[in-house]
Length: 127
Image (cartoon, rainbow, N blue to C red; front, side, top):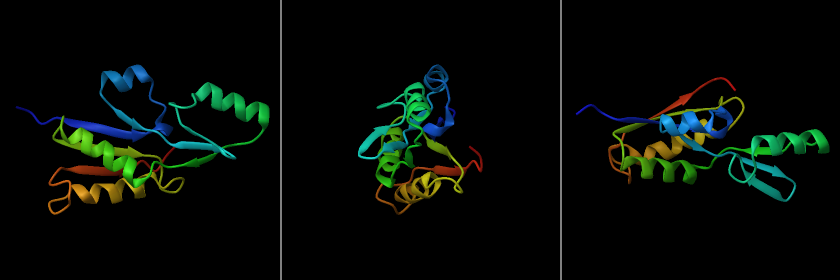
């Protein structure tokens, strides 16, 4: 039986939902904050709504990468349905997503609490 590898990315990738579903790509959302209001990108606020808010208010949100726990939960859930993960993220020069995904990956090494489960974290070096 061939191995089954899954792809994980963050919500800056802008992969259409139909393609993400078709290829079973897991998208972990960034957090967008305007002052005290915080939304999960593409879940709590859609791209069109976020762009409208930027255009009308003239204020860009603070964007925070998914945290280590977000990536750990994602990898743990995928472990049940695949043989490994390739996790591709927004450039490390623009976000902490690569760093947080890498820290989460450590729990799935041979001696980590997640047990042996291969997770490769890739810095896209792009937007």
